[in-house]
Amino acid sequence: MTYEETGRDRSVEPSSGVPATVLENVFDDPTHGEPGRDRVGVHVVWEILLLAALAALGWLLWRADPAALRGTGLRTLLVDAVGLGLLALAAGLSLRTAAPNLAVGPIALAAALHYAEQGDQGLRDSLGPAIAVAALGGLALALAVVVLHVPGWAASLAGAAGVMVFIERRSAPVLVQGDYDPGRTAGYLFAGFAAVAVLGGLFGGIRAIRRLVGRNRPVADPARRRGAVAAVVTAVALVGSTVLAALAGVLLAANGPGSVTPTPGLDWTVLAIGMALLGGTSAFGRRGGVFGTLLAVGLVTTFQAYALASDWTVDTWTVGGVAIGVGLLVTRLVETFGRPRPGSTDRPEPVGDGTISTGWNVPLSQPVDNWPPTLPTPAAPQQADPWRDPRWEDSPRRWDDGR
Image (cartoon, rainbow, N blue to C red; front, side):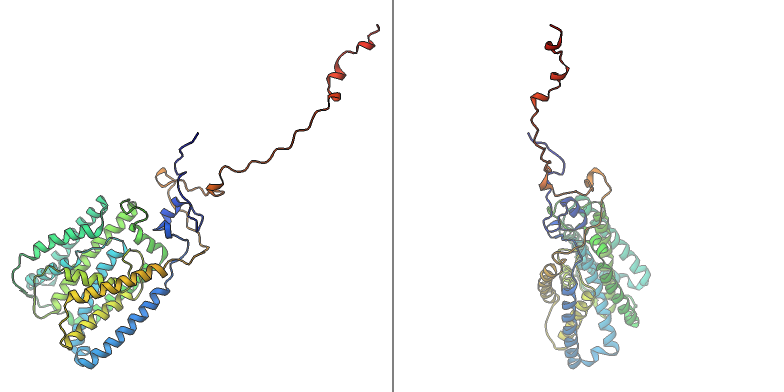
């Protein structure tokens, strides 16, 4: 006879001895959910290599065009770095939550076209509607992702198609009408972007925040819902991603003296995803470095300026494709060497609210495979002496009845 018990078929994590129900709540991947902290050494090594590459490329740019690193050229380069950096932050934020937003490029280009057409009304009047529409679009995208629980890349690709319809309504380049010059505050803009990127990386390195942000990362079946907390975090990340993309488009349009050409904008998406991956953000979500995004943006911006100074014909598709290729290799390194060390003694924190939906959180006193417990062996029974039977003493004695 067999009995069906809820949770009895749950497996036990062999490396830690923690029930799988607990691991699903604490770790993002029970198969590789060893207790302990993620290792950051791989990020440190990769960011040192990025810094060395940036220094070498900066020296080459100085030799090819010294004017690009001083005066007006330097201010223009810094604003370009901020614009591309906002795109990288938008892509990286969605990647961290395991819901990549492929619409960041078209959204940025649509915002750039809007600013080019409405810039003569002032920065506030032209920027406000663009940010509001981007936030509403991000909210619609977030609802589609978290309510239907579909992959972020698929839902955002559909959203990108809708944005491209808006872009294709323009048949000719649009001349920028506004007089806003971000170069006058280039240093402050770059300092603000650097602070946001580094602080975001630092907060993302905290174990609790990292697990919270990466809660939407699939566990066993990607189609399984990851809970209300994961849905809220993913929705906030997608809305923030679209807003950052719109800001990037406005800044890049205002920095260029020419016009904005209506293109699909997917090349900007490829470049944004490539810079995020190149900086050390994992394509699987959750993991990322501290200075990686800042260094990757600086490297791409400097390379574009060096290619222009050297009269090379290198388009955005090429740069973005190479960045994604190298970034995928970095993702494999991060996922391989960034996991907790084997044999960690850290134990997972107690989680759950005790309801049936989250399972029982009472710790097991022994492993499941030892059930039922071994019963104590009873002592061997002693044989009774028939001559000591009480009936021999209590029964009447016939030989003593007087006969």
